[in-house]
Length: 632
Image 1 (cartoon, rainbow, N blue to C red):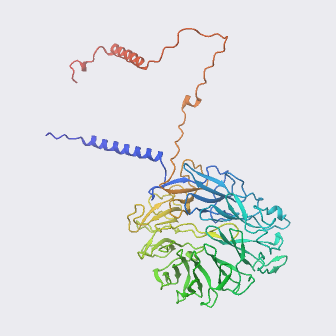
Image 2 (image 1 turned 45 degrees about the vertical axis):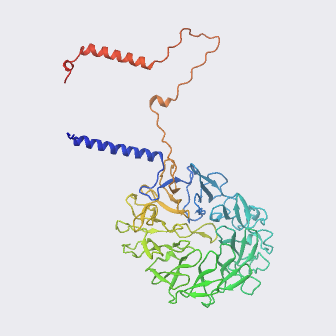
Image 3 (image 1 turned 90 degrees about the horizontal axis):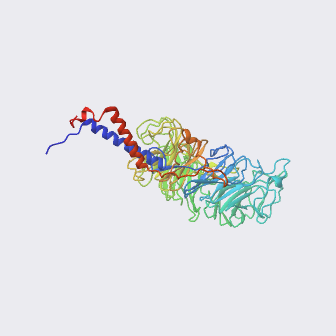
């Protein structure tokens, strides 16, 4: 059989044509579908969360002076944020307005949650905390009355039952405002509105219980330390509020029937049954069931400082003189986990309190179930502690710890730049989540945000930088860790564990969350399962983003199709359609005769062809010499 050879230049041109066709098809597919980070993980698509029209404003940076609460729903699909501008539906409340964005089938929509307050009646954002699902929130209705101000006008009640003119906290749910302090649950309130102050200290995840602080006597068993016309702000009382409206004093010492002012709250269990607090005498106490108080730090001789407690409040950890103690509220036992006395703080605990990670002068340690601690890393930055505000994160089951260290823990040359590390307890393995896997030394730090405070009180929120299963870590980096990051600006990254989302690298995989090409970006928050990852950026990543500082969601398997670009008009096309012919008015002159013949495209085409053949013959004759022999 004769072999047929294909000319190499022809083959090369054919291959190039196929490549061009493949590129064109890929471009067509990307233009019709979602747009996401180049080389990203989890097939994430960007979605513009904040509105395209923001009345000349922008999304405020979390933690900035006067910023509102920024928090994502644990289940994803929603995020709360703030802006100094008033936009969206509702009434704005300068200087900060609170918004809630929710994901829809074709776009994100934004609602304005700002209450109808008098302009400037509060220094920071009105909202203090949101529930885990963002369906409820606690907000502050303003300052105490200013000198010469009219209290009733400045502090209008937002809900029924609130004492008129007083600063108050409200639970917002389904668009309704429920006062936490009412004329019914605070019968001992005798201070004038101008002398009364109140703050939210801590609350349960569902906001079903909250601990409030004020020097005023709100209940009949509360003591009040006078100070001029008001009370001494340093002599605070603690009160637990429940969703049913009940208010009970917390800071009662054992066997005492009246409060001991000067208390500070430490933690509250998820069901509100246990509240840890520190008294003016410097000791640590536990109030249980609203009826019993026990001293927690007896073994340490007093002076204990609570570090963390399990969600049910049974297991708690506190430090005293460099020692770390494990307290069991049910068993009644206390264990010293650091006899050497060189503890610098706790990084975090598991949800049930069984696992605790802590930092000493010699490194990071893990203790499980009260057993002797095991060293897991040689160093960690102090920014990781304490658990309430530090940068470290622990998974609910306690098997994964994410933290920041400027030391070289895995052999990678940090050059003194902080890097993000992940410890996997089951594998007893320490990994560097932010280290450049090409071996290049970092040019800038990689960081995890700590707790973000908002409003006027001490309550704060910690974004979910670590997914609930510990398989993903989200962080900011000023270093170009992957090739697509070329803008020399801070960007948001994702680290993914091996055998997760298609990653097969033993050290895990790293990908961009933000753009990496044309602007700065910072991590905001994520859902617990990391389907939604929110970030703030000044880059316009999608065509509908016309500028400003916006929130984006890098959603796994998400993203909305980009709108088709408008085709510009050309020449006469810009004039628009021709006007419709005028309908003849009866009685005016009209033309009569046969109607226009129907259009016959085929016949006209044949006529044009015939004329062209006649013209060709006239010019060249009947046949050219190349056609006489039938061969060329």
